[in-house]
Image (tube, rainbow, N blue to C red; front, side):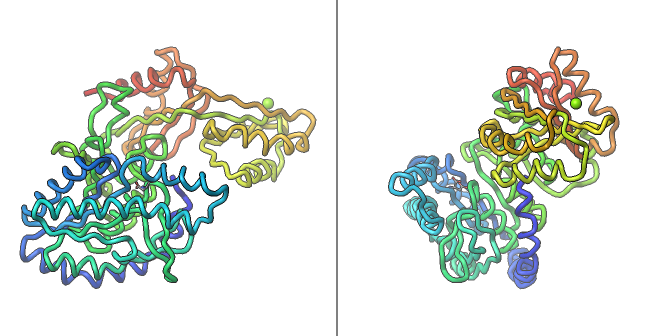
Length: 439
Ligand code: ASP
Ligand code: MG
């Protein structure tokens, strides 16, 4: 989970509350005319080539012709943002983040123009807007800016004139006119925030899968599509490896109560509805199982059990810009303890470099041990709050399959274990079955 984003969202609450209050008149007119305002977001794969852009154009027009007002938010065509990053690296070792944003924003700008053209070609009437033109103001943190407020006047003017409005995702503008981008996957955030700002009746996130699944269907063939999931479960699934959407946008949706659907842009199958928690949702104990591969663990053995030791260790890790996941400290009986944590295997060399100088200073017996080739398996469900025996059921399923558990961590709605990476797929399958999730 991107914890860093929470304070920023809070800081911006007031702007949004104000914007929402001002818009109630328009919502009333829509209600009287039985017209819905829909925000549809199409990800990079869904607009990945001209044929697919034409497919989006047809779908959008169909939704409008069914009597709705449509705002479309698009990503860059798949692969474009990555190639822009590569291009930058070819001309400069350290491009400024200001110029990086000018460059990256062109990916989405290409897609809005092409999508509008495709709709117009089909006889529709569409106009494109960059993030700035759509009134998206951000702070000045280049390459990971946060939305400060949205003034959707231009959007409303175009909608009122009967246009489909195509907005570039992932970008905004600072108060002094600099182009910013919202962090990788940021088009989701544009769609959710825009839906909140215009008080949309519906927000649809179109992607290349049918929705959120009980587990990755490539691993668990019998995984099922989840019909309804709460924001918290969606966030826990995302932070434990099931990346369907950018976590920041799910947090934002929760904060502003934006219900949204995750759907497939290539078919008309019903998707997954993501919404606030409701009575009855707790009857399902485990909503989903997620897998995160390429993990590593670090153990610092026999450190003195004194105030400030953990602080020193994690201060060094933070300074090296490493994000840790599980942290486990042993109960100490003999004035020494062991601290273990997990991290992405890619960060292991950095962590070793940061900790080696520190470890010798902590005491003679202190030892640094590391291991990669591990993976994390998590079960997530708000039903865990009110059901007992969830962890033991998971551990029993793993034991029966002969899979050793190396670390365990729990939160209110999640139980996660670390196992050998070679066993993760089997682990996912047996746990999926144990909780009755198989189709
Ligand atoms: N194009 C950006 C990215 O690839 C934003 C997005 O697709 O949501 O991260
Ligand atoms: Mg020990």
